[in-house]
Image 1 (cartoon, rainbow, N blue to C red):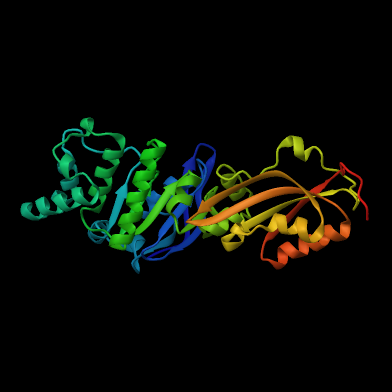
Image 2 (image 1 turned 120 degrees about the horizontal axis):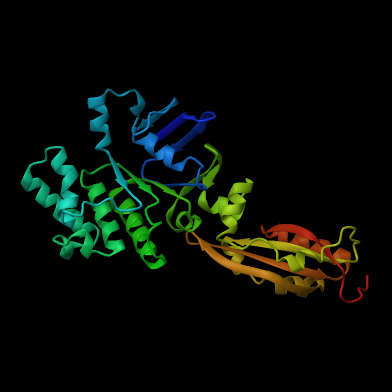
Length: 351
């Protein structure tokens, strides 16, 4: 559906050229929800403006549905933009128009006959759950209702691509969930490709199929959402995931780690549970099989795209042979294990 090829965008700054996008390449499949996340200044806004050609890329190509939109003449570009719907952070509704009037606007601009506009507006109001609010003005609508009108307006021309630019950033958590559920439902029912620009990892976790992490105008990591959450590689991704999933050890525990640990010291490790393994009683099995004493230091279970993901940090005390056998047992059962360090045994160990 979308192929972004070596995209670059430079701006003239007071001290020279500023590179907002640096050789950015991405492929987004038709019908998927693709998230793009990054901190402020990562290049997200510049990218979405380039995708709509509100900003002309300095170099590179953007193919949408096989057409290079960067090479289109003005008339062809206007026609191509009809196939792209845009939902904004701050709604951008016309206060002088009702909800129905706002949804009708893009249809009026392309010369759609009035009877067709009326039918389409009615369809869109029903789609976003606002059939009874068509005559309401923006000032009479809640934030969530305004965003539903914005989504309906974006879909009025029946686009194949929906661009969502920080769509839920101005909404409270409960309303955010309802809007994300609506976008997911629209994606499923209409087969619409959705490109979601956000700085909130919770949004990515909730509905995205795949995600790309931007930093300083570059894609530093991309892949399936579950993979990036459970095994982030780049420091930026690790930090973003850490805001949603607690992975860092408390300082009080980290301070106990020994610089020159002996094999008689307790082993501290993090066990990562995914899929069916998340429901297995592996800790009790380790105690039973290997006779180790386990102290649970930290842990949580979360769900990412409906799949369980849990981490638990344990302190294992006992004979070294038993510790190593337990580690092998965990790995043989398809559990990821990170050895974090050693701490002084609190009880004497009989080897």
